[in-house]
Image (tube, rainbow, N blue to C red; front, top):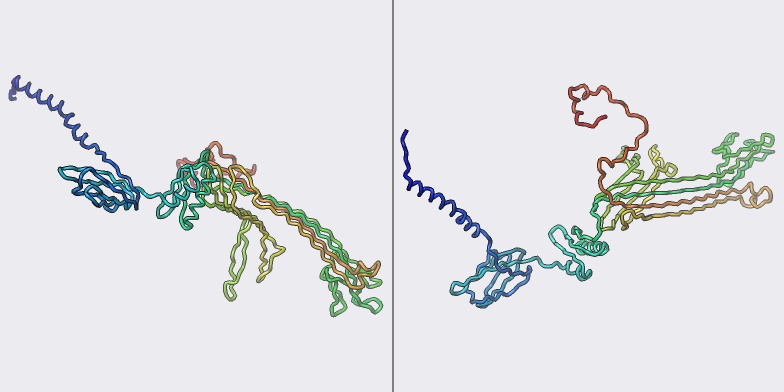
Length: 455
């Protein structure tokens, strides 16, 4: 092994060199950092489509501008420069003069105040309303003093651009951050009716009485008819039938009173997001046949039941609703028979409107009281005027009906439920079928049900 010896004065010089390098490195490193700090220049502000004149303190020899598409500069006199704003943005303007003079500016071109914003400021003085325009939408932002101002400003914006989309981001003091609305609708209907029928038809047998064959009817109710033979044909015995075999005479009497009562209550509830339409249907479909060609019958299904369509718009502490509730049921009494198919009609109650409510408030958007009374009388001339027996040649039919309908709506701002707040499902006390020998239970480890909830 070689023996290396270092002289003392050489080692001292080596240590001194290292110390000099260590103490001088931070100083050298700080110089680039100081050079990297951006230099600030005076700013010139102007609006797109506007111009301004800059007057430097020296005669201008030459100018340079970074992006003429944003702003353009022209020397009009030795100490006047005309600057034109063309598009929003920030660029640099450098001016050179004699004797090495030079100055630099940051030219900031801003978007002009839209005409809609100027109009809103005139209509609503003191309100902080900003309007941002782009190719697809109009954005309203800022803070306003009341919900009415926010709603009216949005309506003016929609009227100024009927085909554009208006995004309302204005804020109102005391507004709620909830963005989901649950609408509670209640249909309450009561229907009462009463019918009174009274009439009689007198007739003789087919052989007559003492060579007389007769029949008396007002034709308001069915009466017996004579066939070509020696028989009587009865289409309806009504509700009282009398016949005397000794005199071969009889009568059918219609004496009936009917009363009916109908009550209906439907309460659909539906949840929707702000400015999104939601629909709900609890009912079914019934088939309607129609001709699709020569000798061909096709089936089309029509919906019926309880339907609810609505679109909520949350405007501060108000909820603006466009609601269309509907309740329909099958009506076989007014149906038709087509190609052997019995097609029912629809009894429908529907309302469509726009209202403004606060959270939890209710509004009766529709109400109906319908009173109907009908009286039909029929009589045989002269005979109906005879005393005692005159009422036998008269008949009458009275109908009375009263319908009351009320539609109530109640909007509520809601939030999602936490797991411990979920209510129990409405189920009957009976038990479901127990789990059997499923394939998953036969596999080792539970067959994919290990991570599922316990049954």
